[in-house]
Length: 107
Image (cartoon, rainbow, N blue to C red; front, side, top):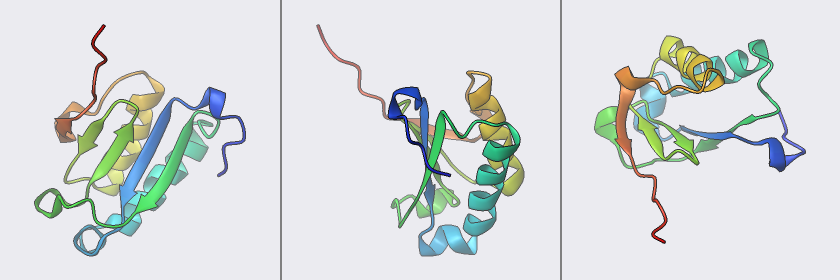
């Protein structure tokens, strides 16, 4: 699932595959997100990367979306699929949103 034209990239999903997240369906969430990207034919504008621990273990399984800066917690395979669907519709997955760390520029 490679993105060759980064000009089309709209969402970069970072999937925590640290120890706690892996014990809380991290692998299943990763696969569900990637499967849904394929199903939605969104591979041209959504890219995924597995990460190690994101230090939010109390919120496992954690998924982060940039450039929006949205951090999602307690993700499951079903919510992972719902996240991809929401991104395709230009929305957030409010139910699982735990933080937004987007920095806005000051003019």
